[in-house]
Amino acid sequence: TGILCASYWRGSWYFLDHTLFPENRFRSGVVSLASGITLLGMKQYILSPSYNGTKQLVRVFPPPKSTSLRTRYLQTNRFIVLYGISSACVLLWRGTWLLWDEAA
Figure 1 (cartoon, rainbow, N blue to C red):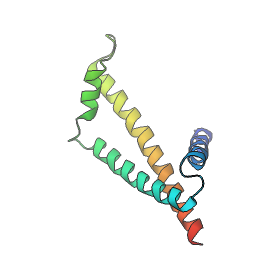
Figure 2: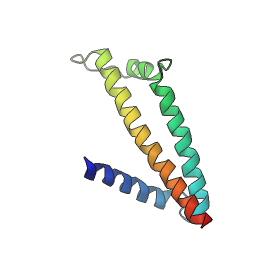
Figure 3: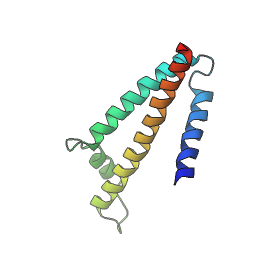
Figure 4: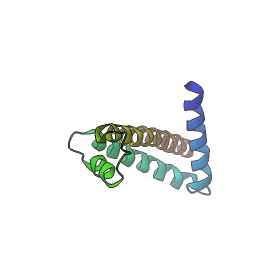
């Protein structure tokens, strides 16, 4: 699990290094930090009981006959939250490190 986690972080970090304002580290850091904060806030809202977006998404793309609607909802919600939070963490840390490096 540790190797997979480190590989995800490293791959995400390098991907962002090459795609998110590669010529301007300060701008890349600010956008990473702001995106991470926004994404993490959105994921916290998705985890709240008042969110119904995943239920609507599951109804638009119905599950196969062998899978219940509740099971599909839980699987979809888990996937969205897992990758959303992991991406938000990478963005937050990347933004923080880039801005610290630029300030030093």
